Amino acid sequence: MNFYQVVIGSEILNGRRKDSHFDFLKEELLKRGQKLKASFFIEDDPKLIEDIFTLVKGDEEAVMFSFGGIGATPDDYTREVAAKVFGDGRLYEHPEAKSAIEERFKEQAYPHRIEMAKLPKESKLLKNPVTNVPGFYLHDRFFFVPGFPSMAHPMVKEALTLLNLPYKKSERHTICVEASENDLMDLMKLIPKELDFSSLPGFKDGRPYDVLSLEGEGAQEWMDFLKTEIEKRGFRFKEGERC
Image 1: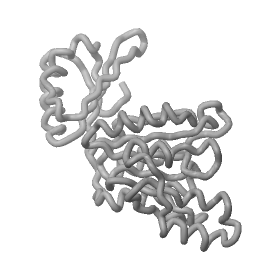
Image 2: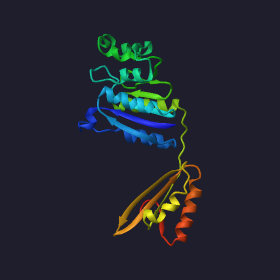
Image 3: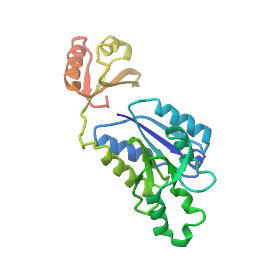
Image 4: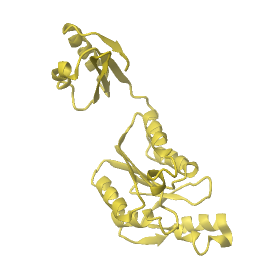
């Protein structure tokens, strides 16, 4: 699975509010041995939302978590755009969502809050522990939740349960080598593409260093190989990210 995050809200980009979704989703995925492929922070702009959703849809392995814009105010575009990109372009009154909103707000559900029960065709619901107004998901892999963390984060956990992602810690192996990237380039090219690999160069006391990190099946064996080759070349290294 390739995990994407879309955070919709001009108030985050203009500094009126701080984001808390990125760190939350990142950590929840890491607990399950997964990681984000991409994270987008975008304005409340229906064309931009459509473009990002379409981009994600183009990845057949995509799982998306979209935060914000599913309310009933004029600047909430997510439901309509989701219907256009992932559905048939129309919104339908969802009976369960309607009942949940009526149960929570009674006569105050009308005329505005009830609009949140209009969802893309074949939407399934995510529970909202705060207001009872549900989030929704499509095709079992595109999840849409509110912008409020207290509502959104429980829904994300529910979605991760639905995806049946087990808790597993993927081991990462990292060394800091007293050498430049250029000194190690030929070794880097030998590392299999299937491994999550990174090279982070820097300088300390005017001398170059490079932090090499590997994660994935076979990472330990490849790190052992790198250490052996690095020692052969006379470079010193330390375990971890600090030299």
